[in-house]
Image 1 (tube, rainbow, N blue to C red):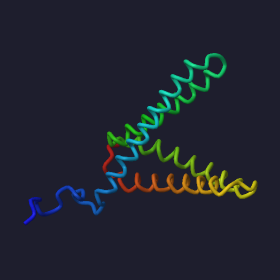
Image 2: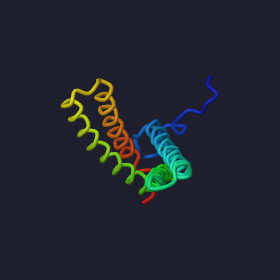
Image 3: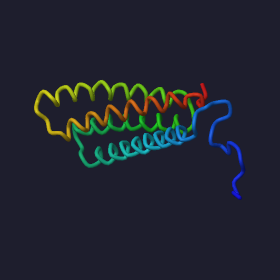
Image 4: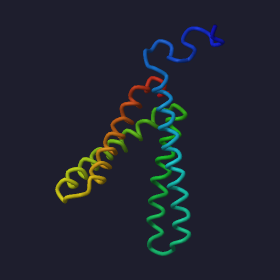
Length: 141
């Protein structure tokens, strides 16, 4: 006899056929984007402090990108509709530039690692867009 109650038990959302693993993956994606944003902001602050002069502007740009990534990750975690929207736009940009990189990788005789990285980056962006689309019913508009 199992100590766990029978039934859905939180494994699926009421009224939808979407499995809970998709929501877990969406939360993991949001958390990773938030952590990446925090890392970029910390890197920008430390880089600007350690490298004064004209290169400090690069730190400011990296910091802005970090704030955007962190806000998007927080939007996914808080189930706000603008979070996945920002991530989808950035993922589409990654798909376009990954495709361009893949084309140039074949043209200039790049190593297999560069080609594999471009393919992995494209597939990861496509998966991120798909999982956020599958879980969009949980977001507040």
